[in-house]
Each structure stands twice: as C-alpha cells, then as structure tokens.
Length: 387
Image (cartoon, rainbow, N blue to C red; front, side):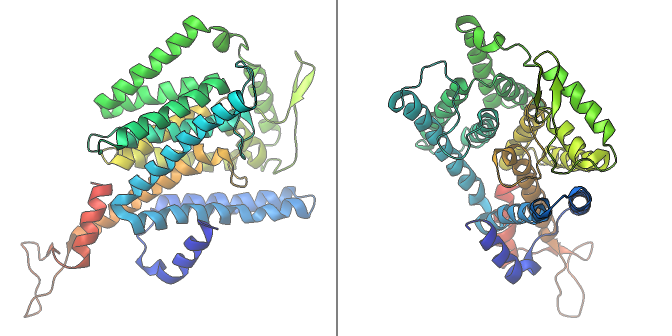
C-alpha cells in the first residue's frame, strides 16, 4: 500500500520525467521475467502456481518505488534509508528483550523476530543486511552529533539479535564483506568496523566456542552435491514452484532446498534462469563499484558483497512474495539501480546546449553548462547523492 500504489500512480503521471534505466539491466530484467513466466506456465499443475505469474510485476513495482522515493527525496534519500535502518535496530533490540525478559527464553535458545520474520536464518540474513547499511550510512564524517548515538544504539540492537540468533555464516559474511569494502574503499571508518567485528567473533570463539563449532557444517556439502545433481537433471527449464526434496543419507531424512540460493534458482528455473540471475547480480556489483565514492554507493558495495556471500549456505530463489530474502537480493539491486540512474541523469543535465540570439550556441564546443533554473537544482541535489 505504501510502496506499490504510490509507485504505480507516480509512474502513470510522471514517467516521462524518469531518468533512463541502464539498458543492460533493463534487458536482463525483461529476459529473466519472460523466462520466469515461461517456466511457471510449463511447470504448472494448477491455478495456484499460475497465480505466481504476477511476481515479476511485484518486484518491478518495488524497484520502481525505491526509484520514485529517491527522485522525490534527492539528497534526503540516504537519510530515509538510515532512519529505517535505525528503527530496525531498535526493533531488533526490543525483540531480544521481549523474548528473553518477558517470554522467559533461555539464553541458548535461537531466536527469530516476533513479527513476520519467523524463520531463524532468513531473519538473520535480513538483519545483517540492515546492520551493514546502518554502519555504512550512519558512521559518515558529516553526521550531526545526535545521530551517532542513535546509530550506535541501533547497531547494538542488531548485534544482540544476531548473537542470540546464532546464525554463524551471517557473522562470517558480515566480517568478510566489511574486509572487502575496506580493501576497495580504504576507509578508516570501515577499518574500525572490521576490527570490531573481528574482535567480537574472537571473543565468541574464546568464551563460547560451542556456538561456532557445535553444529559443524550442518550437512551443507551433502546438500550442495544433491542440489547440483538435481539441477543437472532439470537443466532445461527447471521444476518451477513444484516441491522437491534432497535426500541426506547420513540423517535418513531430506531437505526442501539445497541451502544455496544459486543452486535453488538453477533447480527451479534451469541453467538459463541461473545465468540470467548471475547477469543481473554481476551488473549490480559493477555498477555499485563504479559509484563507490558516493555515500549510497559505498553502502551498495558493502550490501552487494554481503548479500552475495550470505546466500551461499542458505537461500531460496528470489522470485517469491516479499520476504526477508528480498533484503539480500532485490534491495541491493534497487539501491544500485537508483544511484546509477540518478548519476547518469546528473551527468546528462550537467552540460546542455543553450541557444543565443542568432541561432548559435555558446561555448568552445558549441555547448555550455546550464547554470540556472530547475536543472541547476536537480544537478546540485543529485550530486549530493551521487557526486
């Protein structure tokens, strides 16, 4: 209601003023949507699965909603992102207090949220995504003094939730993504956050090693091998939304998915569907890296690195209704899409031809900067978001 309806209304009225979407992304998203619909139709056994044809439109409206928000808010867009992340950190802390103090959970009990994120590992993945965006946007040099305590309190809430959630690979993914961002951006703030994350994991290893070692590899290698074999058996166009099971001989039981997002995409949508998703993901990573000097660009790089790693041990195809998996699939794509489109729009508006009496144009190359009027304001606001 608050994202899709305003986005659709804005698109109907003002779509002519939108910055152009990158042609590579537009082509990849159109191709993967068409392929998705083809697979759903080919694998459908009834009306329940045919109804899933609407999902590409849900995702497109979500991406469009983020774009509309960025176009309207301009330099305040990153402040809105930070505000949402701070609120999420407070909610994460309240969740811990509610479950352990009010509900009387024992401290070794793994927790999920008290809301709609009821599955343990996906809740941790989405929480980690919010935490990393909070750190990248909230610990900037140019923040007001009152913002930093709120950011730190939110990060404490996220850290508490992630600790009691006990999803070990999420911890490792956060540390690895921060190390990667530190190497790419050479930021002192990122180095400090990396050092803190390493110290926290070291403390856990010293004082509570069972949290890291007790469950071993949780049969991930066996699940991956089974998932890879199943993908090869259905390489053409996959199984769609049909249920499938991967047998684990050691446990004499089966799992509903291979605990790897890329394998799950391959199983459900075939090799072509997997290649198209990898294409979208690689485009997002390259575009984020190009704009790494912008505030939202740095956050996009960190989120992209984290999201690409965290789904290797747990994750399902992103073609589902809005769920926590969107925070490590479509949210990074949305941020990259916004910053790339606005940066290219600002570059196009920076130099425009201006007619002068006599029919000629000003400037050495018969072009000159447009320094007055609404274009100047748009350029100034876009530069703050995407310098």
